[in-house]
Image (cartoon, rainbow, N blue to C red; front, side, top):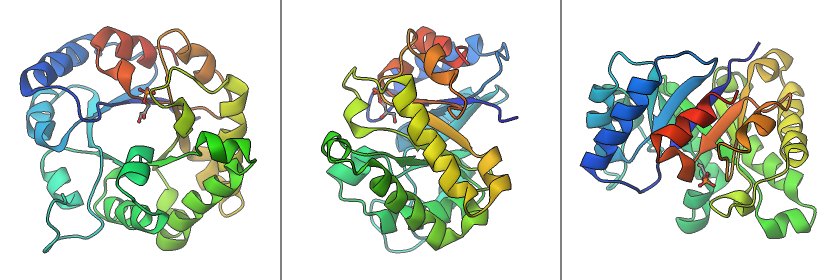
Amino acid sequence: MRRPIVIGNWKMNGSLESSRQLVLAIGEKAVDDCGADIGVCVPFVFIPEVSSLLDGSRVLVGSQNVADRPAGAYTGEVSAQMLKEFGCTLAIVGHSERRALYGESNELVAERFRQAVGEGLVPVLCVGETLDQRQQGKTFDIINAQLDAVLDTSGTEALDGVIVAYEPVWAIGSGMTATDEQAQEVHQYIRNRVAGRNQTIARALRIVYGGSVKPDNAARLFSMPDIDGGLIGGASLEADSFLSICCSV
Ligand code: 13P
């Protein structure tokens, strides 16, 4: 059985003080194990504070990106080893905002993924199509290219224990959620594609959905057979709505 996981992606939001308040509230209220693992992926600069406030709680801490190299002259990047040193266990890679706004290619994302796995971080690999691509019937081609870049760079075994997030770009921050069936169809497709290379890894792979997940639609999405939790943007910025989603599994 796959244990569901719900991860908050705070994106570039909050101040030091509001981050403190938010994680204290999440840490305090997340004592009940409602059947899901919980994580928060916070801006780099808040990681030390968030990690120390969540020390001893069951809430995992993650980053929103990770460098594609181990160390060296790479201005602006933060390595997997540095993230581990400050208590991160998760690292989002390939978020659509990184791909679309900062030009991150499938190959670059695959290198970031490789670095995360190499250091023992759990990458949360984001994949997903734009509205245009969906309307042109290219959803699966896009998913294939995004997934295969990682599989070819790191090998299928590298997917053991990682998390894949299906985030249709058109559903992110738009209030336009994929229907349960639309999401399930792509999740199943991802699992089958991995199963084509290794069935055991595919069966254990946690595939979470992201894109306008809210307290009122989470339970339905999470009840689908191949949806193993969520990656939550806007609704993760408020403790009650985030925890209500966490406990909708
Ligand atoms: P929203 O939940 O705000 O749509 O964001 C989803 C997302 O991008 C999570 O990574």
